[in-house]
Image (cartoon, rainbow, N blue to C red; front, side):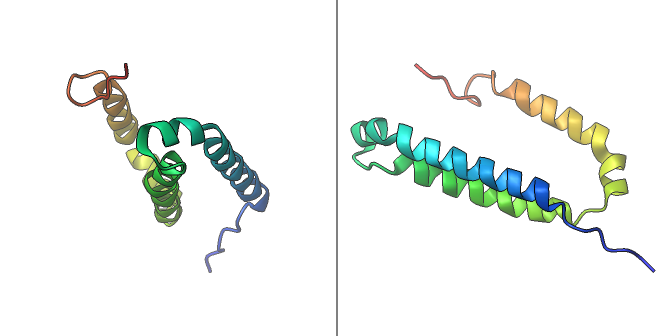
Length: 99
């Protein structure tokens, strides 16, 4: 009989607090710049929630369903793909140039 893994509630609470803290920081700091550039005080906050938080929660739930031995098996390939993606940030027309 398989034992269902329990949720680490302490880790879940800490992650939730960090997410809330980050959202509050984005909401308070980005208001003047967002209003100046886009005419909408909540542009950066909505952008971060829709393109950061929602996909992040979806992917966290998806990856929590994958068994750990499967992740261990493919971890070298995933690490290599991650490193390639990090390097591609510096490639012209792929990464974003600020300034």
